[in-house]
Length: 310
Image (cartoon, rainbow, N blue to C red; front, side, top):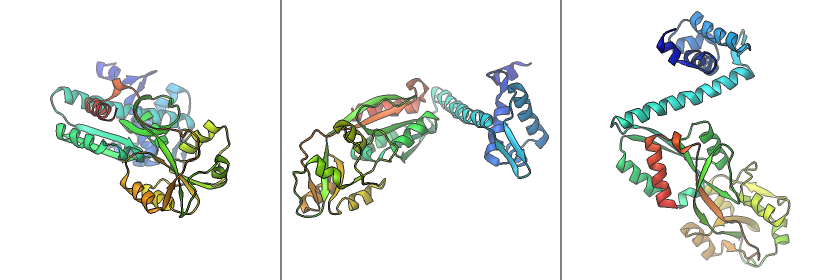
């Protein structure tokens, strides 16, 4: 075996071209289309996958008349190869960076409340310093950010949460915290409401039902109560603002300078409530897999975010 072959081996004799072939079959849906996409012959691609199956002693593909699909074993390998491929791209970027070519690509996920910070000015400053880096910013829900950072799709994320926070498989740097407030829609609202009364009404939140660090979840845990019976969930900030005006609908907000919210409170469309209890704080955090795995561009941007927001 030559040096190049040995360098391309990973794990128990697996080779990158075998994993690449398997992943492409999964993407293309058939061995024939995968071979065309990789510009190799169909027999050669089939041989690569079968060699890998023999090495592991399991079937990686379900082969049928309509095409080929991954078995559970194949899905594991394909997912891992996607991560390996992303890390190889980042390694190439790091080498280019060290050679003096400040280029590459960064993809950052942010949850909606992050827009209320001065994050835009941080990104603008980074673009000025590193114009050769292609910067992508995605607005996502926190759970989506965590999953995408874990699998390497995002370089890092900036997400909001309530209560204690320790996302599995990720490192977390606290950036900023804000007090929160409750409001009720409709005119002539009594600002002093009991918890029992609030719990009998409908609530609206931007957090998805499976997000354990969501506002209503954390508040319910804090009060040792089950969740309110009626909860509407809205991930659109603009629609959330409009829906919050509905009579006797309870909404929650970060208690910060917000001209849109201030206008609603001043006009009486929303009334700030005083339930006589401590409310959860909203925290903003930087999340990433491992700081050592960040590209130079990612590391620089993460430092700028920490410096500006913490």
